[in-house]
Image (tube, rainbow, N blue to C red; front, side, top):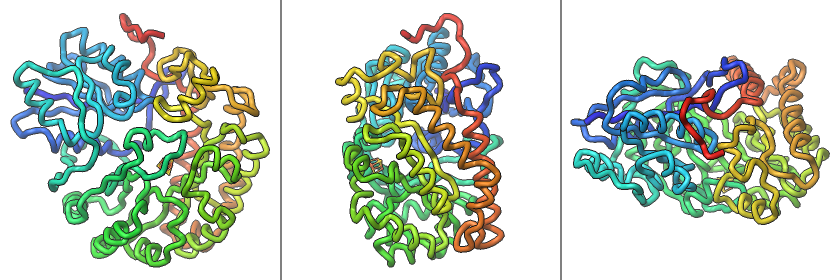
Length: 451
Ligand code: SF4
C-alpha cells in the first residue's frame, strides 16, 4: 500500500507569485508517519514549498486541513479523485465541518490523529474505507516519536516543532481550540516527550501548545526535565505565568527564550465580552506581569484580535501604543475571524452579520486580511485597513529600532539581537506578502467549490 500525505498551502497572489516561505516542519505529518505501519510506503508533499506530483499512484491521499487551507485542500482532493484515488481529510476544519468536507473527499477523519489512524490504514488495505472516522481527542499514551524522516531534503526553518499538550480549559468565544477540544486539556507523558526531543537534532524548539503553562504543576515537572537537555525553546503561554515565580525560574532555566501571549485586547469590556478569562484575572496588573516576564529576559510576542463589539479605532490605537511601550519583539494585529463552530461564528450568524455567505474560506471574493463579518464600530473594510495599517506602523524601521532598545530583552545579548532582527524581518515580509492573498490555487479546471 502507498500513502500520500499532503500539507496544503494557503493561497496565491493576483500575479500568481506568492508562495509561503520560511515555513516550519508540519508536526502532524510526522505523527501520521509514525502511526503508519512500516509495510506502508509513505510519501509526503508540502504544497507550501514544493509541487505535488499528483500523477503518481497512491492508495490513499491524506490531507491535513485548516480553515484557511480548506479551499486548497478541496482542490487537491478533487484532482486526485478525478483519477479515482481515495482521499481522506482531517484536521480542525473537517472536524468542525465534516458534512462540507465529505463533499470533496471519500472520507473525513474527525478529531486527533492518534486514536483511529491505524483503523484507517487497515480499512484501506481491505478496500473498505469508511466515510467518517470519529476519533477520541488526546495524545498517544504510548511513546510515539513523530517520524521526521519525511522532512528530509525539504527546506524548513531550523526550528524543531514539538508538542507537550493540546487544548485549553478556557472558553474564549472566538477560539477554535476551545470548540475542537471542548474545553479539555490533554498532555503527553514527560518521559515520552524527552525521548522525542533527544531523538531529533535541533536545539532550538517551538512547543506547538495552545498554552504551555495550562497546568503550572505539569509545566514545572516538564521544565525540570528539559534543563539537562540544554535546548532553547519558545511557545505560547497565558500572562498569568508571571504570578508563579517558581514556574518562571524553571521556564528560564530550561532554556525558554520567549512566549507568544494572546492579549487580544487591552480593554476590560472587550475581554469580558470575548470571555478571555485568563487575561481578566487581576486585569489591572498587565504592566506588572509584563515587567516580571521582562526581568527574566523573555521575548514577548503579543497577539491581538480586533473587531470585537466593544472595539473602536481608539482601541486599536491603544493596542498599538501598548505593544510599542512594552517593546514586544512582534505583535499581531489580527482582524477577528469567525471560525466555524465557534461561539462567535454562531452569534454572528444569528445576528446576520456574516459576510461571504457565511463561508469565507471558500468564497471566491474573500482575500486574506479582510473582515468576514460586519463589525459593530467599523465597516468591514475600515477594520481590515486599520489592522493592516497598525501592522505597517509596527514594522517601520523607526519602530523596529525603537523597540530594539530594550537591554533587558531585545538587546540582552548578541543572540537576542539576532533573534529580534530575524523575526522582525520575517514577520514584516510575511505581513506584507500575505495581505490580500486569494485562498486556494488559481482556478483549477473542472472543480466547483459550491460558491
Ligand atoms: S485561552 Fe487561548 S487557547 Fe484557551 S480558549 Fe482562550 S484563546 Fe483559546
